Image 1 (cartoon, rainbow, N blue to C red):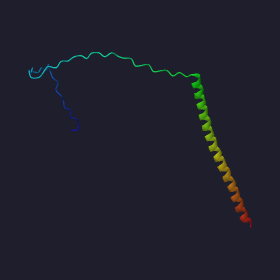
Image 2 (cartoon, rainbow, N blue to C red):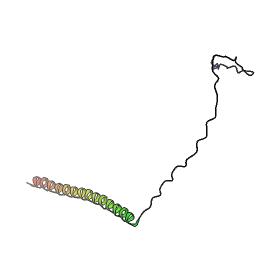
Image 3 (cartoon, rainbow, N blue to C red):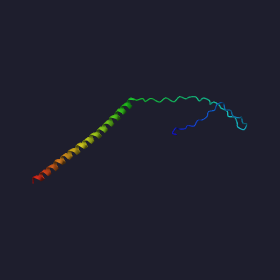
Image 4 (tube, helix red, strand yellow):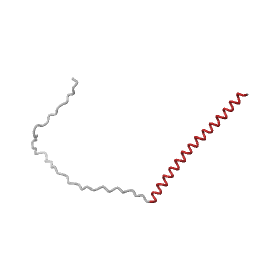
Length: 102
């Protein structure tokens, strides 16, 4: 009941020949002529001149300095904010304590 039913396709048992018709032109099968294989051009190798090496090193140094300056400025901004909050907390604590003594 639950088994799949796979249809079987009968295979030809012998050579199948058709009848020759005179109203259909014959088809000629020709082998294509071989196309000469053209080698792909070799990829050019990267050649670094001394000037290019200096430019790459200078560009890398500039990137490192800029990223470092940004990170240091962010750290400085966080430190200034923390110091400001600490001073504000001391002032508020002092004001609250002086109110309680009066």
